[in-house]
Amino acid sequence: MKTVFILSDTHGNRRDIDKLNDIMGETDYIVHLGDTSSDGSYIRAKHPDKTYLVNGNCDPVKLGENELVLEIEGVKVFATHGHLYSAKSKLTLLAARAKELGCAVALYGHTHRAREDFIDGVTLINPGAMSRYCDQSYCYMVINGGKFTHKIVKLNDIRGAIE
Image 1 (cartoon, rainbow, N blue to C red):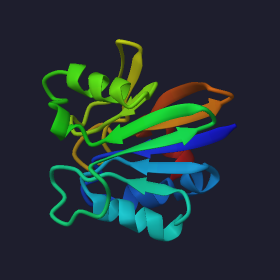
Image 2 (cartoon, rainbow, N blue to C red; image 1 turned 30 degrees about the vertical axis):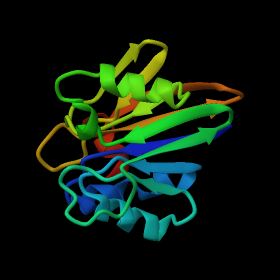
Image 3 (cartoon, helix red, strand yellow; image 1 turned 135 degrees about the vertical axis):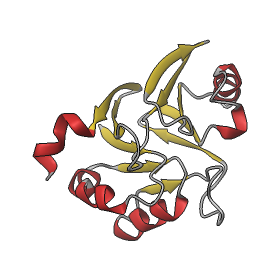
Image 4 (cartoon, rainbow, N blue to C red; image 1 turned 90 degrees about the vertical axis):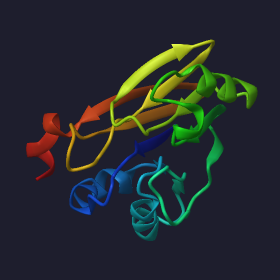
């Protein structure tokens, strides 16, 4: 069994990133989906062997990949920021790319809105954003034996537990 912490669109909000450090420390993988990849690099400095970064449209310095595929416990996971696949207006391009790569899951950000969709055999997950100016959320995923489950966690729901 492996656990994955997924976040996106942090936009320099390291104060709240730091509040989630213990949770990130306990997971097997951390995926930062861009905007701002320097925040992802900040996380990688604390958790170097398990942090993966993708670049977003607001990343002046590209510290990650535009997209990546991770195979975890028999599940292939596609990760990208979403802007290269028009994620604000449609998800069909993103689902098609994930399917082309043989992935069961597509992780993306860019919209600042947490959501879950299922298109053409692919589960699409947007963890939302960790910016100071939105409803903050992340995704926690568990993968085991070729199966996965996930939960979008809203920071307002757990604020007292992490402060």
